[in-house]
Length: 195
Image (cartoon, rainbow, N blue to C red; front, side, top):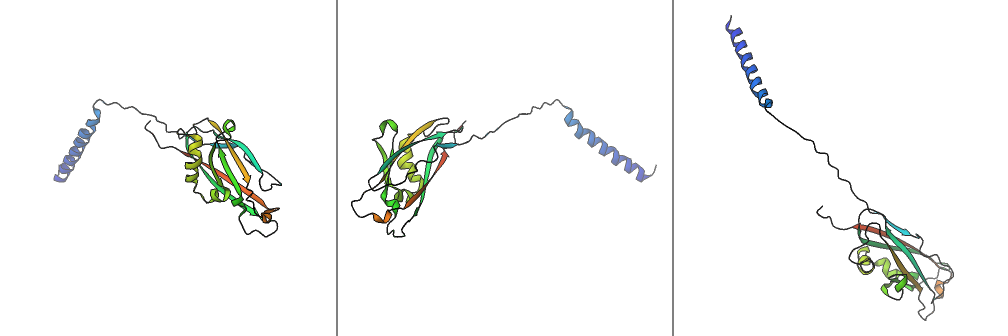
């Protein structure tokens, strides 16, 4: 046998030996188990009934209207905060407005139908429009909902009183005007917790 052949057989034998040694390490006892886990996210679902709070015609200075509506948490997670964004537009019938009609509409947030004389917060639509949604939560919904927020499956009545304020002065510029109010309620969850 030639030297090259002997070297080739030696190298092949060494490689086979190493393969058997390394393969042998898996020959000992072993055990394995598979864990199946699920992470399912909950959901926030704030609903409002009715969605149209006020639809009034022929208001005059001094008129008031009290409306109540339900805020419900139809989701699976508790709602800690409700942020309210206010926007409105005014249709000036005569084109003679020198003032913002929203400054003359007073808004009172009341506790509920049983305690309608107790005001949570009072402001005008113009001031409410300029407020940050977080400030509305602090002034209105923290009082309305209490420390617990709006728990999953819970419904609360919110009562709102609107007044076209009679300021004792000439308000003829608002005759025939229309104010279209849009409220957007945004629900936020609380902080995460150790499960």
